[in-house]
Image 1 (tube, one colour):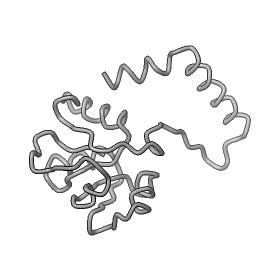
Image 2 (image 1 turned 90 degrees about the horizontal axis):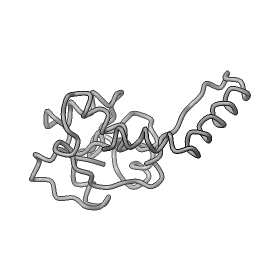
Image 3 (image 1 turned 60 degrees about the vertical axis):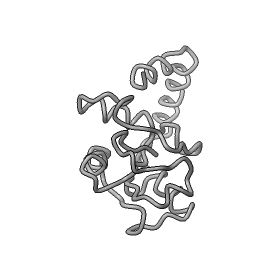
Image 4 (image 1 turned 180 degrees about the vertical axis):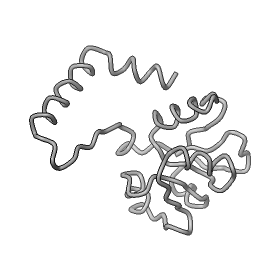
Length: 139
């Protein structure tokens, strides 16, 4: 979870403290599921949105205090708006169970295509390409 660095009023370094603030995250996402499991309540300290761009706009406008998205997604979104993530957002808390990127396929997608995708992903992770791509967007 992250907040704008300009928000000096937010003092949060763990998930329990984050419950005092209004968190914006993707509707029906894994992050949303984890937050609800940890005691966040929609309408009280949790607001669902349909896109990371809208979530970031809510953060910028002050309609949200924290944003729950994977770090790579946030860095890309902030950079895409012409801003520097290092000076714009601050990481509050990282969920080990949702910090990885993932891909979803339609139930109609053939198992062969999913296996080929996984094989390709394994290859780029093994040869270092995956890490270079992450570094390009995180650094």
